[in-house]
Image (cartoon, helix red, strand yellow):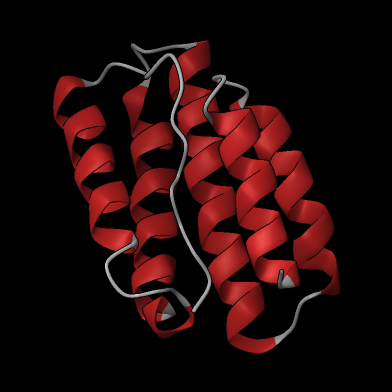
Amino acid sequence: MSRLQDAFDRADALGGKGRFFDAHEELEAFWMKASGDEKTLLQGLIQVAAGLHRLTLDPKKTDGAFYLLDRGLAKLRKTERLLAPGTLPPLAAALAKIRSSAKPPAGLAFGLKAA
Protein backbone atom coordinates (compact mmCIF):
# COMPACT_ATOMS: atom_id res chain seq x y z
CA MET A 1 0.00 0.00 0.00
CA SER A 2 1.32 3.44 -0.85
CA ARG A 3 1.82 6.11 1.74
CA LEU A 4 -0.75 8.24 -0.07
CA GLN A 5 -3.33 5.45 0.07
CA ASP A 6 -2.58 4.96 3.75
CA ALA A 7 -3.39 8.66 4.29
CA PHE A 8 -6.65 8.29 2.35
CA ASP A 9 -7.65 5.19 4.30
CA ARG A 10 -7.02 6.85 7.66
CA ALA A 11 -8.98 9.93 6.60
CA ASP A 12 -11.86 7.73 5.39
CA ALA A 13 -12.04 5.85 8.68
CA LEU A 14 -12.28 9.10 10.63
CA GLY A 15 -14.41 11.05 8.18
CA GLY A 16 -16.87 8.17 7.96
CA LYS A 17 -17.47 8.64 11.68
CA GLY A 18 -17.87 12.42 11.36
CA ARG A 19 -14.48 13.01 12.98
CA PHE A 20 -13.40 15.61 10.43
CA PHE A 21 -10.99 17.43 12.75
CA ASP A 22 -9.21 14.16 13.49
CA ALA A 23 -9.08 13.35 9.77
CA HIS A 24 -7.51 16.77 9.21
CA GLU A 25 -4.90 16.06 11.89
CA GLU A 26 -4.04 12.61 10.48
CA LEU A 27 -3.69 14.01 6.97
CA GLU A 28 -1.47 16.81 8.21
CA ALA A 29 1.06 14.26 9.49
CA PHE A 30 1.32 12.85 5.95
CA TRP A 31 1.31 16.34 4.39
CA MET A 32 4.34 17.40 6.44
CA LYS A 33 6.41 14.60 4.84
CA ALA A 34 5.06 15.03 1.30
CA SER A 35 6.35 17.18 -1.54
CA GLY A 36 5.23 18.47 -4.93
CA ASP A 37 1.82 17.52 -6.25
CA GLU A 38 1.33 14.94 -3.51
CA LYS A 39 1.64 17.74 -0.94
CA THR A 40 -0.89 19.84 -2.89
CA LEU A 41 -3.32 16.91 -3.09
CA LEU A 42 -3.08 16.26 0.64
CA GLN A 43 -3.53 19.95 1.37
CA GLY A 44 -6.72 19.87 -0.70
CA LEU A 45 -8.11 16.96 1.29
CA ILE A 46 -7.06 18.67 4.53
CA GLN A 47 -9.02 21.76 3.47
CA VAL A 48 -12.07 19.64 2.68
CA ALA A 49 -11.87 17.99 6.11
CA ALA A 50 -11.41 21.39 7.78
CA GLY A 51 -14.40 22.80 5.88
CA LEU A 52 -16.58 19.91 6.99
CA HIS A 53 -15.38 20.38 10.56
CA ARG A 54 -16.27 24.09 10.46
CA LEU A 55 -19.69 23.32 9.03
CA THR A 56 -20.24 20.79 11.82
CA LEU A 57 -19.29 23.35 14.47
CA ASP A 58 -21.73 25.96 13.22
CA PRO A 59 -23.94 25.13 10.22
CA LYS A 60 -25.20 28.73 10.13
CA LYS A 61 -21.71 30.10 9.40
CA THR A 62 -21.19 28.65 5.96
CA ASP A 63 -18.82 31.22 4.41
CA GLY A 64 -15.60 29.89 5.94
CA ALA A 65 -16.65 26.27 5.54
CA PHE A 66 -17.61 26.70 1.89
CA TYR A 67 -14.41 28.61 1.18
CA LEU A 68 -12.38 25.67 2.50
CA LEU A 69 -14.49 23.11 0.62
CA ASP A 70 -14.08 25.03 -2.64
CA ARG A 71 -10.34 25.60 -2.23
CA GLY A 72 -9.78 21.99 -1.24
CA LEU A 73 -11.75 20.62 -4.17
CA ALA A 74 -9.84 22.90 -6.56
CA LYS A 75 -6.54 21.45 -5.29
CA LEU A 76 -7.87 17.91 -5.64
CA ARG A 77 -8.91 18.62 -9.23
CA LYS A 78 -5.49 20.14 -9.97
CA THR A 79 -3.77 16.96 -8.81
CA GLU A 80 -6.41 14.46 -9.98
CA ARG A 81 -3.81 12.57 -12.02
CA LEU A 82 -2.48 11.19 -8.73
CA LEU A 83 -5.88 9.59 -8.07
CA ALA A 84 -7.33 6.40 -9.48
CA PRO A 85 -9.75 7.22 -12.30
CA GLY A 86 -13.29 7.88 -11.16
CA THR A 87 -12.58 8.40 -7.46
CA LEU A 88 -12.85 12.19 -7.37
CA PRO A 89 -16.29 12.69 -9.00
CA PRO A 90 -18.25 10.98 -6.18
CA LEU A 91 -16.52 13.16 -3.58
CA ALA A 92 -17.14 16.28 -5.68
CA ALA A 93 -20.83 15.32 -5.97
CA ALA A 94 -21.11 14.73 -2.21
CA LEU A 95 -19.52 18.13 -1.51
CA ALA A 96 -21.90 19.82 -3.97
CA LYS A 97 -24.84 18.24 -2.15
CA ILE A 98 -23.49 19.35 1.23
CA ARG A 99 -22.93 22.85 -0.14
CA SER A 100 -26.45 23.11 -1.58
CA SER A 101 -28.10 21.87 1.61
CA ALA A 102 -25.73 23.76 3.94
CA LYS A 103 -26.01 20.80 6.29
CA PRO A 104 -23.01 18.96 7.65
CA PRO A 105 -23.01 15.22 7.09
CA ALA A 106 -23.00 12.90 10.09
CA GLY A 107 -20.03 11.27 8.40
CA LEU A 108 -18.31 11.19 5.04
CA ALA A 109 -15.70 8.76 3.83
CA PHE A 110 -13.85 10.69 1.13
CA GLY A 111 -13.42 7.61 -1.06
CA LEU A 112 -10.20 8.64 -2.78
CA LYS A 113 -7.84 6.02 -4.14
CA ALA A 114 -4.24 6.58 -5.15
CA ALA A 115 -3.36 5.91 -8.79
